[in-house]
Image (cartoon, rainbow, N blue to C red; front, side):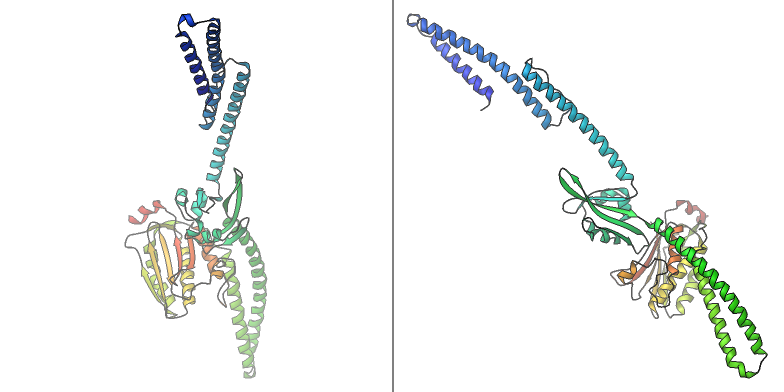
Length: 444
């Protein structure tokens, strides 16, 4: 029972005793009765004073507890005019000031961290204990193909339809991996944790390394190619000169050296092949900057139709065109993009071998070009290395076709991917950036 009720009950009992004694006949009253009545009155007065002196500090403490429960750190307790109690009030008010300042500091610090996380170029996914996404920043949403980071909240990473999500879901606590995906993008992914309220909370960190790795790779293979091209071309020039001289000498000789002339012809052919081979590598490091101009994607593909049909016809492969009815505005360098499409269709045709089907399709919003083939597909392990310098799945491949394609598409700021789907079809998909300024250029 609360102290206030106990004191009130005692005061009521004393009051009842006093009233009962006053109602007795005067004849029965004695000295003892007057003493008792006086003691009751004095006890009641003392209890009232005690009640006020005890209950006032208790009420103040109760108010302080209520303020803490409601987390109202701006309010303060008033003095109760009792020395010991006022010391407690002063200590409580000092604690409230410290709590308010600490809370304000944490709020400002959290706000700063929220801003820092939101604008960070690194993707950050904070997970719950059930591995559901609690918070995602803009970079993480963009990496995973979402326009709004709030759309990720409540989802599990393994439920997302993305190759990057598959890499993230396979991480164990404390693990860091670097992966090159089938769209030539390179990411360093980590699964870490931070402490909050005494418990570890997991989070995923995604760092995009594409530009840095591509620049480093390009510097490396540019230097190697230049050195090799210089040495091979110089050697081939000398060898060709000697072979030409030998051919002239053999042409003036008798027929006894006819077989030797054929050997010289074969050597010349091999030298020419070697020169073409080195030239192809050298061309990769001499790709010009893209000169982007407004173009209709459908009209551009129509201008390539005959060339692509001829390219596929050599292998007995059928090619179909499924183009949108309305114009699709894009900004592109038509010369470089033509070489890109030739490489893609040529790769598809070589993958099929013969008697297959290639489909070239376009779609709007966003502007997308997709080349689909029904070849044998791409091995998952090979898919991770497709856009690596000089990697090829072909026996006689040099690995420069997709390297050229990747370089040109990056110059166009396109998003692209090459993968075999669940239906067994292999798709090379190219998404062009939104350039509304291209609309009026071909509608005139």
